[in-house]
Structure formats: structure tokens, C-alpha cells
Length: 289
Image 1 (tube, rainbow, N blue to C red):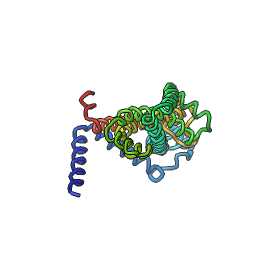
Image 2: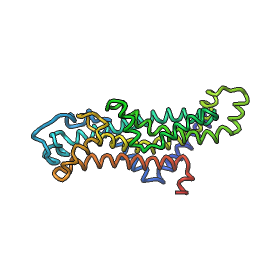
Image 3: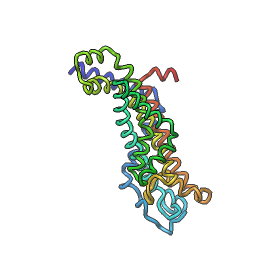
Image 4: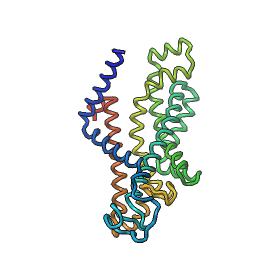
């Protein structure tokens, strides 16, 4: 117990030391936590329902038609920003987790088994990776009806090859390590070697890729919603808010500014946190950058 506690204390002190050195990452994490908390609590803290229309608040400025004003249909901009951020986070996190799980499984099997399993798996991943992200997502969404499930599937397909390639690269190195070779020689099953010896040792690059992919997933969700392929109206989304109100940008700039700033803060904060996580896991990258 004493050794375990000492190990935990060393890890905690290392995290505190890294946090104190990377102030930008710590500040970004704080801002991101606030935004995520507010977005999650949107149903309880939003001034009114995001779909409620009020002709009296149509295109009224901040303070007149609510704290952040009203949009084209008199809907409260603050409420729609809160709900939109909530949807962006939920879709982004869900799609990245799905792509990480599937991509990790494919990468582990391809890297460890080799042969035809590796060739076929990675050629399929290369084909998917060759498509531009937005185009591939549009093709996937076109197969399904617009909605949350289709957009999560689309974004998952976009980021799955990235996780598969990252995990396969790590697995190719790890499978030649002595303890993995010893497990194979002792007769351990393939599933046991993968789950007990390979998977725990590829979690670091997976965590880094998770944080870096999350910002891209949120941008992709906003792009699809901007094109009308994401959230179905009147469900709010940051991308759909930008699309709906772009015509009135000069007349009612607040309808564009607030969702745009919220989206930028989310993406910028996640990127900074991702860089901090990468530096914490592999400090050598900090000196190289």
C-alpha cells in the first residue's frame, strides 16, 4: 500500500508540475470545463426553450430581446447557443469515442496479426483516409436520413482510419518487445496478448488522438449542420445558427457573433488541452516543438 500511495503521489505531483508549467493549457481546460458545464446544464439554466418563437423579439438586439438578443424568428439567442454547444459537444464526444473504439480494435488486430488481415484492413482505411473529411461525411450522411445518429456515424467513419493507423503503428513496435514475445511463446491466446499486453500500452497515443480529434469532430459537425445535413430544425446547432442568420449578418450581427465565438472557444480550448495532454504524456515533444 505504501509503494502504491507513493506512486500515486508521484503521478499527482507530476500532473501538478505540468499544469503549472503549461498555463495556457490550464486556462484552456478551465474555460472548457465552464463551457461544458453550462452546455450540459442548458435545459435547466436556459432563459427559455430554444425553439420558442416570439414575434416581439424578432431581430431585437442584446438586452432588448433577451440577454444576447433574438434571431430572425424571435428565438432567444442565448438559449440557442447553450443548446447548440450542448449538441456540438455530445455529437463530437460520441463520434470520437465510437471512432476510437472501432479504429483501435482494427489497428490492434492489423498490427498484431499481420498478413492478409493487416493488408485488407489498412487498404480499406487508406481508401477512407484519402477522401476529404467533409466530402466523406456528406457521402455517409447521404445514405441515412439527417439526424444525430447519421451525423455521429459519418464523423466516426471520418476519424476511424486515423485511430487505426496510430494504433497499428504502435502495435508494430510493441509486438516485438520481449514481454509480448514471451506471452506468445508461453501459449497465450491472441485476445489475451492484445488485451493484457498491447492495449494498455497504446492508451497514451489514443488519449492524445482523442483530444486532437475532438476539435475536428466539432468543426465537422458544425460544417454539416451549416450545409443542412446535421441537426434537424428547430433543433439548434452552432453550425445551423450560422447558416440561418448569415443573411442578416449586417442587420443583426449578434445572431452570428455569439454562436461563432462559442464554436471558436470550444475548438481553441480543446486544441490547447490536447497539446497539454500530449506534452504531459511525451515531454520530448514539448522540446521539439
